[in-house]
Length: 117
Image (tube, rainbow, N blue to C red; front, side, top):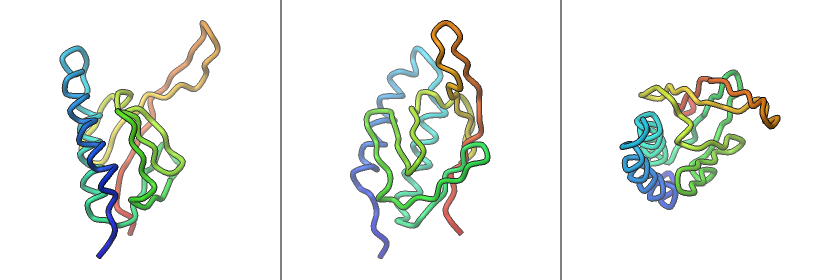
């Protein structure tokens, strides 16, 4: 039987609750949907892939770490609050491409969650 990451699953469920409370002031539905999709993947115990733009990051359930609303999956690290759209495995994430004070530059990139073939 595949090994799941029950600690990450529990923390993702908590993150959904946090985002739901924050949702009164901002749209957090994409972050909640991403957390639900990631829970579904982790429950299978099978390897998966997160694709950010053109970069693919394969991961195992044990590679997932969650701290409040921040998720780390292998080489991918993001706040669920920065997901700005999407559902069912396809999302949009706002990323900072330049953090020069006074001239910060952010852009949106596509993020996809899927089980490995």
